[in-house]
Length: 438
Image (tube, rainbow, N blue to C red; front, side, top):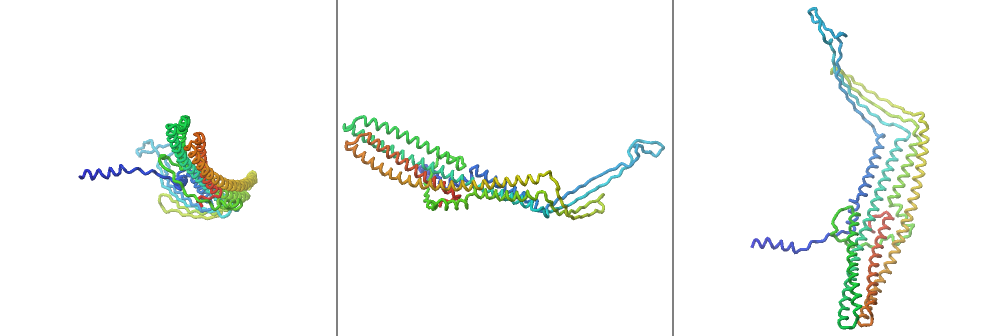
């Protein structure tokens, strides 16, 4: 009895089927942001720029240095020939008497930049702007990764639904084949109908195999987009994605949203701002700088009474002539500013183009989806009529095959257009610089 009690739960566990893992679109997006190497690298690049901005701020803060030294010295003060009287009227070789001692000193010095006509401040501001631009670039990479993850998820979902279409087509063909075999047996239809339908059943099985392989390939791409290495033994869950509020707005309204949200625009503006600070720093490069310095010292010998000292002063540093490097640097900085302003204009034009194309893409996909749904309805009715005509002996197998092909084609097109619409909406979100589906 105890043995049976132990065996029973094992039998129950063995009979329970293993649940298949499910991946949602939110899972795909979250994994891509967290694990995709491009997202990781972009975040690290932003961290580098932020650290460089902190480094550029360092000259504006006080500096403090400490040094210490200890030394031991010995000096020979005996005869120069190294001969020493031995006290008995003789002489012997050796060194004269020596003198030794210890010495030590320590010092503490500090400094603070008082004024340099804004050179260091503007360099720091330029570095801060570069950090902001790098953060915008990193966010842009993340938004592109989000779009790619969504598109890859839609592709996997599309291929899975195309498997359903292929299975339905195969089931219809097998049903027609079974029906035709009976018709041929009783002599109401020729054997050529049976041969044709057997060929179509074989083709439908091959199409199902291709659809299943396409689905596995799409999931492999999805794994790569999510930045993971995992088994393909999972299902993609169909999301409930409503229409976007932005679909009803015109291009000008959408462009205003894109300018406020797109990280590319934020990055370009930050680059212009940073270059403006760079120009201001270059203009005053040749002017002097004023620095406050202070130090304290402590020294002594033979560990006797130490000597203390302290000083404070202001240092003026002025490079009176630098070989005309300062005017050249100023001209270069101004030219760089022109380049950054031109890039900002290019970003603005690109944003308008992307918003307009995304809006058109959504509108076009919506119209195609309506047509595709009508085509599926018509194709199902056509197949129904063809089946009735074939069963009544009025129609032929060619007419039935054409109707079945029409339904399979319309159903597959409806699946593709449905996911084209979802991808177009994802592209519109990317064009607007938004991540949440709303």
